Every structure is written in structure tokens, then in C-alpha cells.
Length: 257
Image 1 (cartoon, rainbow, N blue to C red):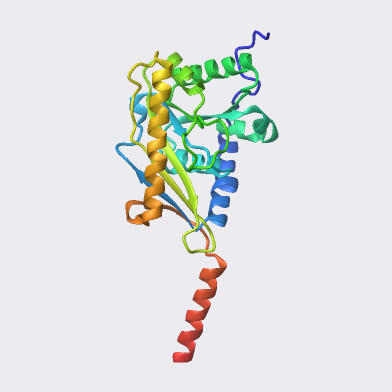
Image 2 (cartoon, rainbow, N blue to C red):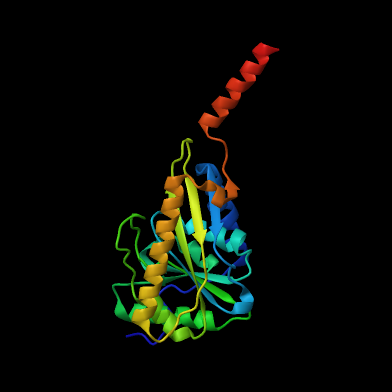
């Protein structure tokens, strides 16, 4: 057993590296591959004056990590010192994500899991700026409509070690809505505080219930076509369908003239 209190791969925040990942990788990829990124927020967004926050998200796609960057930069305006709990195997393959505050967890190693949870709690308690931890409590990619939604207890164990903290559910979803490229949806909030942070089972049940409700509400909005409840966060580049339609309109105008 090692005496090192850190996870196998700790965070290595790098301001320039974080900006490069956001602008050159995450945002550029979303612009290139999506028609739009939509946002719906319920209630006030987390504020640094309220102390640390855990933002817990459903995990249904490889794209979820990129939307996390959008939430941090565009929705929360970069006001939090943000970190991300990431599977060790994935972080070893993409170690540059440590520049954005990612650190590892190995769920197959109980001692490493304990260290990662303690490290996460320490990050949230410390720092000159209020800190945010992004976490996918499902622990793996799962279809967004699979029920019941299963969450791992690690998030509750972290909360029990932090003390006063704000929690914020986020539902993510991806759909094709008639264009060549898909749409990405973000539903954030409302924030809440754990009734009893020391009651890990109760905290986990509440998180699971709230995340399930957020995912179900987002699905209902998309199925109903209720896009008027959402604002456009990002517009992607025009797909071939839109460019071809524009060409046809120009040709039609040319014939009329």
C-alpha cells in the first residue's frame, strides 16, 4: 500500500493547455460536427460566493466531456476552478486532460478509489477560488433512456468529506432533428444542497432521483419538439444539406432576375 495520498494521475492545471483543449479540440469539434448546442437552465446557476460545487452529469456519449468544457467556459463563465474525475485508463491515453484539472480514479482498485475520493474532497475544500468538480456518477457510458439509472456511491463519499457544498444536476442528450448534423442538448439545474452530507445512502438516492428526473424532462422536451424552452449556446457550421439548399435558392433568384 502506498503512502502517497494522491491518485495515480493527479491534476496538473495548465492555463494555456486548458485553453488550447477548449478552443482547438472541444469547441472546434462541436462546431464542426453539430448543428447546434442547446441550453436550458432551471433556477440560479452556481455562484462562487456559494462555495464549492459538484456538477453531476449523465454519461451517454463520448461527446459528454466536450460539453463539460462548454458548461465550464460558456455557462459558468470560467468563474470556478474546475476539475474532472476521469477513469484512469482513459486519462493515461489522453493525459493532456490533466491540464484542465482531470485526475484519475481506478474503480477496480479500492485503495486508489479511496485516494481519489479523498483527493477530490481536498480539492473542493481548498484553493483561493471556489472549485467545481465535474463527475459522471454512472461511471461508464450508458444509453440515456436506460432505466433505472444506476449511480456509483463514490460521489456520496466525496460529499461526506467536504462539508457544506452545492450540487447541480446536468442532463445531456444528442438527437438528429431533420438536419444532416445532430443537435446536442444541455439541461442544467436546479442546484440543491444535501440534506445530510453524512448520510451517504440518502445523498446517493437523492442524486439518482434528481438526475433521472432531469434526463426524463430533457427527453420529453426533445420528443415534444419544445425547443422554444432552450437557447442556442453554439451554432455549428452549415451541413451539406444547408449549403445545397442555399445554392438552390441562389440559382432560383438568378433565374427570376
